[in-house]
Length: 481
Image (cartoon, rainbow, N blue to C red; front, side, top):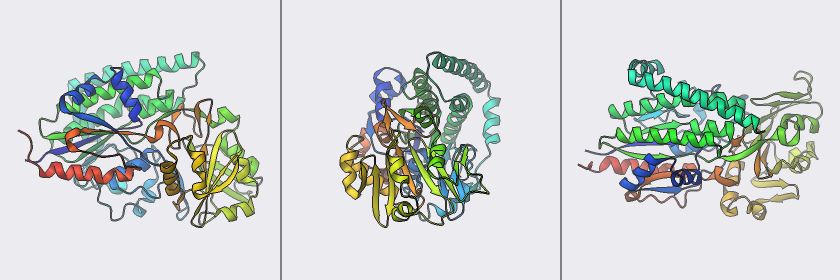
């Protein structure tokens, strides 16, 4: 019989973070798995933007084009597209993934952004996925009821609820007492993720294994939420990795010789400081000051400038970690650099000279335009500037691809590092979505015997064919024993 495949997606953990956790003894189950079953740690590049919707689309479908951020403005349909609790992706989902062959076709896709043509999602999604629900998909209630009916699960859940709540509350007040500023909204989301969603997702994965689904893809987001709330190197985030390690052990123990296990992440995390804390003003307020008469709206934030009905123009800024996309929403297409400069001569130069901004990206026909505090450059002339962030050839390729998206903002703003921390356009203690540091370098943990070569993977969409090939190789080989 063939071998089946289960893939665990551990959100937000960089290759270096995982390596340190292993070296420090924080993940003993995973260490044991590596030593006894010949697993090795691969470092790969997720590409830009370094966000979950972008990376996961690449991994599952092999196509993450036109996903410029965690949230963006769709000019054609006049809708703010975003993921998370108030997801609106279903309003534009029909425009994406045409002709793709998903990694999870006819399998199970649990707690992911996208349905991936899976037969079942066990009622657990990273956002509203009703647009892609399959006929066999069960509701969350059908998964939750037997989970809570089991006294062992119920007892474990009650104990974890008390332990996680008290620990997180302590971490929050200790951080405040030490003068640090954890992101309160993410503290609440962290509680929900750790206490409830993580356990239910693990239960669904094991249930899917018992029912013989393959491949199985499942997302676990507790580390990412904790890192947003407290920072990726905070003790509270490292404790979550122990929780993840326990989950890996549970799933590995449920394989019964039928499944092979692969573990991966989608992006990493870095320490950040909010734009407002660094500059004294919200980013939307800065834009409103540069564009008198305009109504400026921060997606998932406040509004600034002239009243919406009285404004001479309308602007939406969609922020995702260290990147912000600025859209002139009265325009039906992306404004060129030439058009923008003619209408707003000082806008680009003034934004680029802010201490919180590393550079801007604009588009002039087929040419990339980059603006830094030193001035404007075009094309590959930006590479010397990029050398301080990452390998310049690779980073330029990733930036140019993102800048080619029609869905990108009229101006794409990438934040700078201030006192060793990246400025974040959202209120987060840890973040990703931009350039520099470990946010661009996630991991894949796989058996050596599979012979995976990820050295040339420069974006998550290039990981897709590697995983599809592995899935098919495992399905066609005799199962050991």
